Amino acid sequence: MPDHKYKDKITCPYCDWRQVGLGDDDISWETACENEFVLIEGNPTDNNFKFCPNCGRPIRQHKTEGEK
Image (tube, rainbow, N blue to C red; front, side):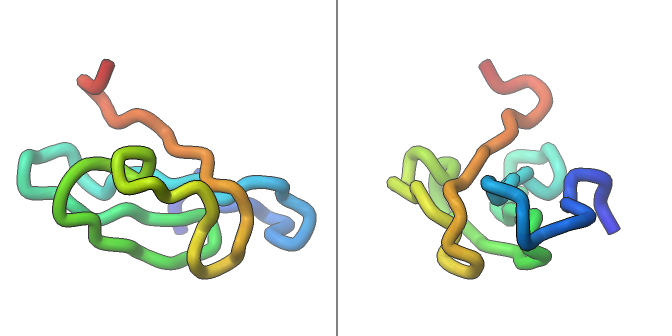
């Protein structure tokens, strides 16, 4: 289980999203609520994701290595 998942998912105010892998072809995002989403272009913010479609919490996106 990735280290960014919350131990107490019920009381956490955010759903952390992290990109899986760091290559150009990696388009999957792993969520704190234990789901994976595929975004063909851009990141969750670029695609107007404000809330996680699975748990409904606000998304807190974490920059991947090398991103400004």
